[in-house]
Every structure is written in C-alpha cells, then in structure tokens.
Length: 364
Ligand SMILES: *Cc1c(COP(=O)(O)O)cnc(C)c1O
Image 1 (cartoon, rainbow, N blue to C red):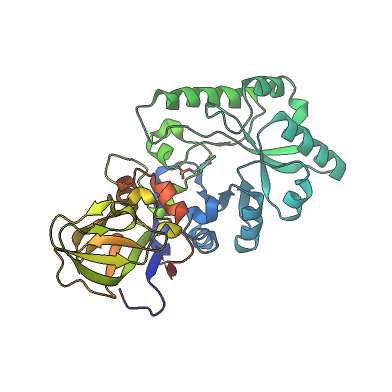
Image 2 (cartoon, rainbow, N blue to C red):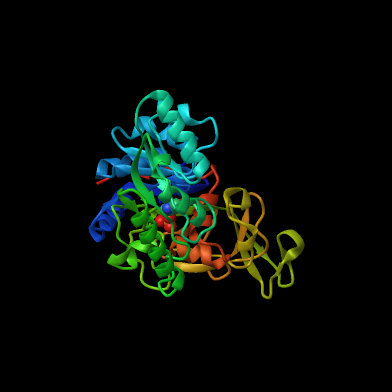
C-alpha cells in the first residue's frame, strides 16, 4: 500500500469487482437483476457504487429510505429506484416528484396510493410487497385475501412488481424457503397478473425455482459470500488496511488496554493501530480479531478502544510505526473478519465509520 499522508486507515472499494459481481449474478438468473444499495451501499458508498452498477447495465435499484432513493435519483438516469421500507403517510408527492417507486406493504398504503392516483388522474407505478413469513413489512394473509377479492382497490396503480423477501435464503436446508416460495406463488396467482421479484443474494443460489422477473441482490455485489459454509463465488469488493502508530515492548505480566483484559504471558511487542469502535471495530472484536502483516497473522490483544486497537506483534520483529496491517484483503475476507466477533458481514460493512480514507478503484 502506498503511503498516504493524513490517512491512518484506508478502505479501498473495487468498482470493477463490484460490477463483475453484478454481471456474474445476472448470468445466473433468467430474469433481470437489480441492486440493493440501502444503507449507503452497505457502507461502501451508494453514490459511487450505484453509478458503477448502472454503467454495467443495472436498471433497477432499491434503497430502504425514501431520502436515500431521492439522493440517488440524479445519478441513475432512466433506472427504476424503489424504497423498500414503504411510504409513510403524506409522502406521495415526494415519491412522484422524484420518480421513486413506492413499495406498498399494507391495505392502508394501497388505499393512499390509489387515492393519490385518482386525484392526479393518472396511473402510478408501484411495487406490492407480500409478507410470506418475515412478519416485518408487506401485506399479511388477511390483507392479501381482501385485496385478491377486491382488486378494484388497486385502481389507478400500475403494478410493476409483486415482491416478497426470504427469511433464511443463506441456509438452503431451511424449510422456510420452500414454504415462502409456495406462499408467494399462491399470492401472485390470486392477485392481478404482474411481474415478480423474489431473490436476494443467497436466493440466487437456491436453484431455478427461486427465479423471478427481478432479483434483488445486495450483499453479494460487495463480495459477501452468498453461500456461507461453501466457497465464495463472488469477488471481494473491498479491502481495509489500518496503520501502526507505535510499537512498544512490554514485560511479561503487563496488562494491555482498558481493564487489562489481556495480560502478556511473555515479554511482548504491542502494535497500536488507529482503528477503534468509533470506526465500526466493535468491542466484540476485543481479544478475538486477527490482522495480517506481510501475509502473517497477528492477534488482537486487549479491549478495543474508541480510536485504537492493539495487536501482539511479538513474532513480527520488522513491524514498525507507519506499517499497514490488513484487516480485509487477500489474506482475510470481510466474512472471516466479521465472524471473529460473531457479527454478520452485513453488520461489519454497514458499521464502517467515516474516518477511513476511501479509495475508489475505477470500473474496468
Ligand atoms: C436487504 C434486502 C435485500 C438484499 O438482500 P441481500 O441479502 O443483501 O442480497 C433484498 N430484498 C429486501 C426486501 C431487502 O430488505
């Protein structure tokens, strides 16, 4: 890594890998493949990653919040942008003004939008979210039955997609997958005919039965393994390196960090890096994380501080101030690092703070 003055942590984002991941997912799916870029593109930066995906050919984008969708609108000409969280009362005009598709998930939302369409005197594009087992967002069984019996409730609405979300797609053996699929098929059969949207990243690896007109992967685009426990089919979309501030020699019996949660059993060299829980390196990593220097592992020792963490560099006599430790890179994936703290890789990425210098490597 080149030395960058003023940077003591660097997050590298590889747009070529992210675009390649999208193309690889598209090649697996008979229907279209969109991109979920909620939470600022899972922490990697929606304003850079979404346009790179658009340039690769992606034309369907999903955020969680309306505000996230509005921010992306000028960057994604001609593309559909939908906000998964669903509209709040009174947001109709903002959705329309910014050309954002609402994801309607209750009869109340359907009524509000149908009324809005009637007042405007035109049909409005919407997605309809059906709850098949998450119990989170979307029309439940009773609401679905009502809508199926009274399709006039959809008057004025251009049903672009009927969608649902799987609760356990990353576990192929989970019986909820087939149950949700059956409920989704039944829901689509009961509703007016419309295109469908089903798979997230992992569901793209569950088999062709989980195909739909529009898949909605997020995590796999960034290189998170959509098939946990099996080889990762995706390319890593990020690297994370942190810089050594000081290396100190301590005697056997000395404590390291707050409350001395680690005590040196031997005379040790402790490397202090500029990366702490304010950067998303949660205290759960204390005494558990691993980093790499020159391809060789170091153990995190002691409790992670707000801005600092400490590694046992006793077996790395060449390590000194200014050197870089790899947290995510060729020797350690984001999935592996997250697992060391019992986190999901989704949490690791979305926790990344704003202090790391971001280096974006361009698309191919
Ligand atoms: C987050 C989300 C996705 C994307 O899931 P990944 O596991 O990141 O691929 C798709 N659909 C919905 C409704 C979501 O909330």
